[in-house]
Length: 109
Length: 117
Image 1 (cartoon, each protein chain N blue to C red):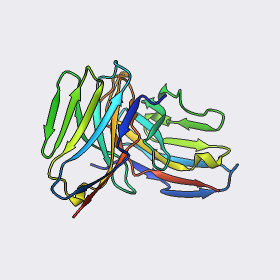
Image 2: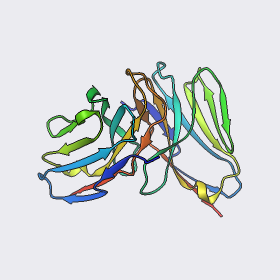
Image 3: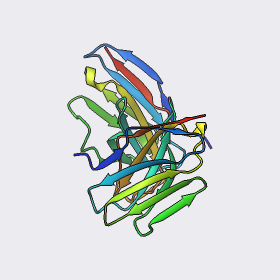
Image 4: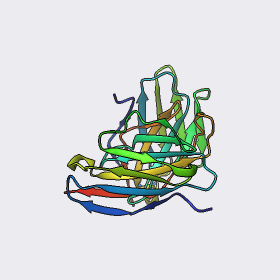
């Protein structure tokens, strides 16, 4: 059962543009929603996370938007840079972390 | 602060052979996880330890996979016998969480890439 669905699978953005990645979840008991960033040959690393009691969280160029009624959340990367090129995973947790399928982001110079 | 250490980084074996992966978590982290990441997919939890006890192993294929965490620190994940579909990166992660409460951030190692021929 795929509890966290992520889209798109891949994304190409020009430098300076906005990257948007979306996730939808099924289990309303999830209470923690992180985004992880993974570079080739490395393990995933936490980028930003949100709890369901807030609708938005911003850290630098990265923003999570959370829509509890729609059971959706998204990652916005403002002023995207070539160094942001990586695979991004959304996830959701109750007691354990369940990951989405990933989005491969390429930012063109 | 040292991160999560894993070895070996790469392993190539024939099907039906056995393989073992080792993980040393961040010092003081009570919770340790093994995830399987198949190419092009998100990590899938195999097993979660709290200190040296198993919290969740519901997705571990127990007919061929085993894991242990002796003394609540290092952990090993073993596959015997390996199948072609076991080709993946095996990620170890740790977190400071206690008492079964999800602690938030997981700290991942760089993974062990297994190729089964």
